[in-house]
Length: 260
Ligand SMILES: C[S@@+](CC[C@H](N)C(=O)[O-])C[C@H]1O[C@@H](n2cnc3c(N)ncnc32)[C@H](O)[C@@H]1O
Image (cartoon, rainbow, N blue to C red; front, side, top):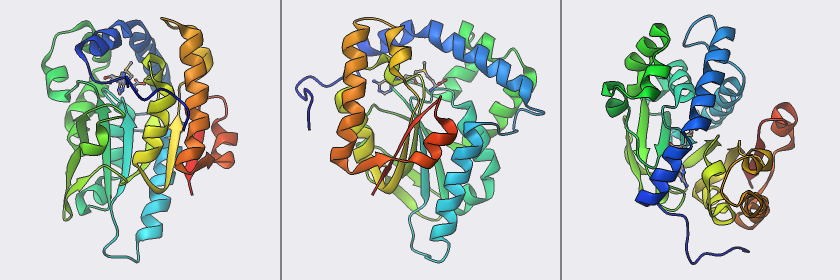
């Protein structure tokens, strides 16, 4: 596989500070969230990509329905932070989550919803602009597993699934969703195939970060957008190919790959 493995982008305090500097991008996302909320009739209504992710999870649940020993279907929001969309999806899948058929996970370098909910930061102020959304989040975030880790460490993380027990995320993740995370990445040529590597067989990867976004960010956008293109090419070396059907639907928003 091409790329430099020697100094992988890890979970360092410097990294975390840099990601805090991505605050402007995050606030932009919150504005988008507000805009999207305008299209919803309630905080729990699913729209856009949320419906596509839900559909992919349900397809995998159906495929495993006849196998009592099958692994739970695991959906990971890589760098999800608040992961409002995952909380919505988890609410829609409450029954399957309680039975252990599905687990929804959100990873961050350093984020836990309880700290967020009890803080008076500007971020939470923006988020809480809508009391109904805040109430929905408070009542439903427990359905999602919030874990800390990056592309190199998530394989060492386990979650506790009802009726199943502890499962390692390594090779047990069925769907990974990424948005506004790899835009900060310094080693996307390595981190993108690492995400492919921790997926289970037939796992699906939704990459939301585009070169266009990286080119508007800093530092060294050219290097990092080249690394991102290389990272997607490197996915073939962990057995992943583009999923043209989903890509057609979400072409403007995601690069979608599936393991063979
Ligand atoms: C701007 S927030 C994006 C949140 C969410 N995905 C969204 O679109 O609203 C960035 C998130 O990515 C995580 N993050 C940043 N760099 C990362 C890296 N190299 N590896 C893993 N997670 C990272 C941060 O901890 C944070 O949770």
